[in-house]
Image (cartoon, rainbow, N blue to C red; front, top):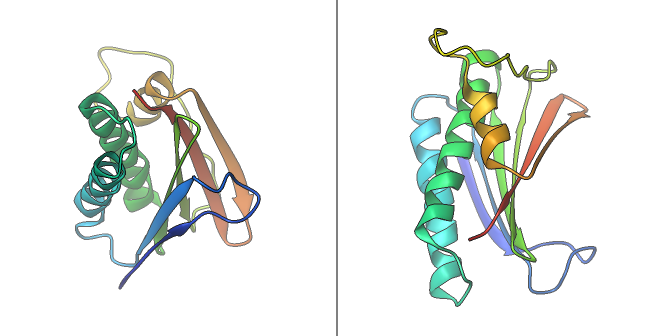
Length: 145
């Protein structure tokens, strides 16, 4: 099951900020679908006049891919991807039903896998994890270039 919505952010945020969200109930294909959703959102904003370069689109796709991959691997239920663009920053929020926060491992070039959060931390200005009633929300903020 998947639901789509695109709307302006709530009144607490600037009037020009735009957001979109999508919920993925079935993990099959969720990673690729979330990447495509992110790219489509950013390209639509660029076509509407926002200064968004291809590098931002690719970095955002990678961040979303890594965050949703963690959900597919660890959470039993659906995940929600929320994108918000305001003041030169893309906020990516991924909410899932798994309560444990992701763990960043020490860099180890010999380790196979488990580099996702390292990648997200390297690309983003900030990453926060907050508990929600039925799991957690990971928020990553990516500077738009």
